[in-house]
Length: 209
Image 1 (cartoon, one colour):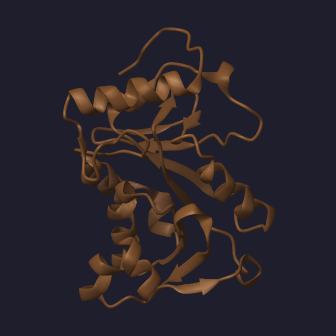
Image 2 (tube, rainbow, N blue to C red):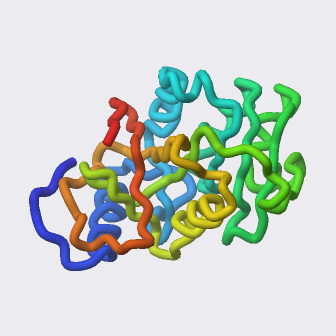
């Protein structure tokens, strides 16, 4: 979906996307999608495109936000024996998951499971940079601008990790959206603290910015 129009506010864009996902029955659990980073039909297919990326094949250390839509990503990371860093809801702490028994992975990637199987770490305990930083989104545009749900958690996760050197210039910044969440251009609404993505995966395509 690509709308060639000017937007007055970020919230206008969020409302459009949440309404589109709801009316077209694209959004899926947890519902309603309003006020959330939406999970969508095709999220698993989008996540599986990660396996085609040379960056993923080489990666050993990957970050995931706690959004439900990313639980497929967290599964793939652990299934492929890579270390996973996650932020808990509201960035209360960071947890490190690694060497999870295969039969426990599906449980470990839930919010409850992350607390159970993850090791709480402070950022100064992490001595290596991330290879990939994964987030969900409400909307993105064709310039790589990203909108979350409006609480600022995604940008704060990025900046916290960046200032500690855990994100560096080699870290791939990636998001996962349905094709209908991609708009043309809302650059004029973005602020200096808003973090761009370098790639998005959808159910149908890999897009590099």
